[in-house]
Length: 377
Ligand code: ACO
Image (cartoon, rainbow, N blue to C red; front, side):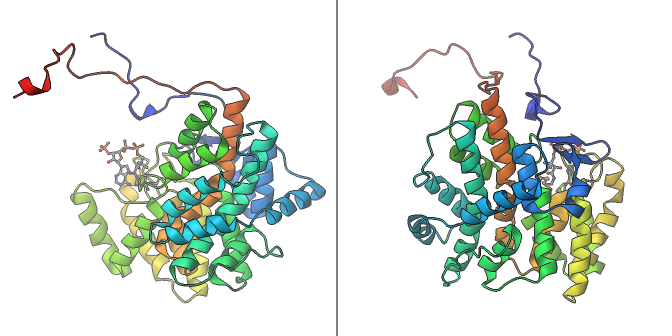
């Protein structure tokens, strides 16, 4: 059999061009549409960042107001979808989100319209609706009624409001705002690739977002934040962190929240969540989680020299935990923040489409004789 050039996991393979985000994994640099993530995290808002991603430029004040109104006006979900959420309420919130987004396609007026204008409108609707799904499910499974969206609140504050039923503390709302900015887009990660594969067959954006949600669920991708918080709870006290880490590594395990296919330096998104975790822990009188995670990071220093540093998921879990958000909502939080990035990549895929269809190198037996069933041993 002929030798083939194999790129397992498509590592370091470019498969297309993008104008969405630029990542330099050697120095830990991330740009959205040319703008540095640090500037956006410090100076922008979720609404402005989503506009930037979807429209390719920073909005004027008037454009931002109109876009914000579009997001606020599209937050509600049909009663039929709430009913579906009630039916599957015992499932993992990520499965509920996937199911509900899939169900939304049955009620969207433009499901089959794959023009870029309709795809953009659908992506904006899904961006607005995803938090409503996650919050509604969290309440329903606790025996409470969903809280309707509050059009007075921005995307981040409204999510916390729908989840807890009270208007959030402004600092927590701002931290959630930053979190959404940091999660909005990230190149050809596994879930965006899955979304592009779906779009490459000319499936619609609901299908692509469902593929993205499904792919994000795994602990080697979006599921890491939940695992990091479980680890912190297991560790319990900062003094136990070192022994815990050494035991995981000695048994050949991986520390969740460390390492990245592209970053071989500190993930720039982690910087903001680390500071958010520290500040929120102080404010809540619970500095312990920051101390535990800082100790874990310190013990992992030798790995940092090999390019295995903390990633975005390392600090986000503790931030959510300090806000009182249940651990199994951490991945859906990531997913609802990523809907704009998936939408943008679907638009890019449609704009210059090609079917994404790589090859698998067959290594099994060849030309076996077919034996009828009654003659098999
Ligand atoms: N803990 C310990 N060792 C690690 C870790 C880790 N978290 N991550 C990578 N390594 C080691 C591997 O064991 C391997 O060592 P070896 O060369 O001695 O065999 C080496 O680093 C390279 O690892 P790969 O698996 O080849 O790296 P890959 O790019 O395939 O994996 C991944 C990236 C999956 C993210 C990995 O780092 C990992 O499993 N991390 C933990 C899960 C996690 O935090 N995921 C979130 C990623 S960020 C995101 O998706 C939003």
